[in-house]
Image (cartoon, rainbow, N blue to C red; front, side, top):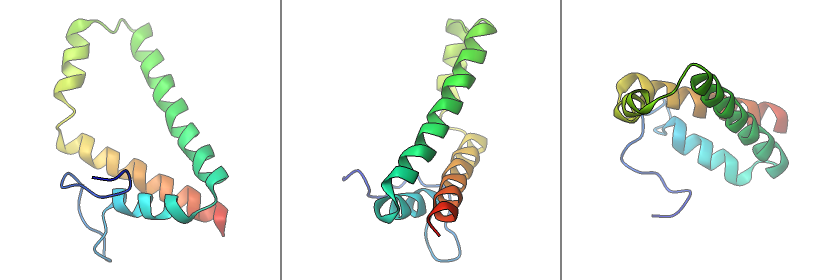
Length: 96
């Protein structure tokens, strides 16, 4: 499967039959690449901040196991979809 192809683990279809994930990859291929890179960097920085906060609160092996266990979780799926939606919104807004 290619980097920009959809898989079976998406989070629900929008009114046009696309998932938030597939919409993001469709937009990311055609949008201004500088904007796409800036928005991805923001997401990665946010992830890095969240990881640092967890580490400062004593991220240990037990918590690491809990994190891995929640990778398959409906709430996490919804939050992931929201990240894709936010990315699409930020990219499209700046490209207009």
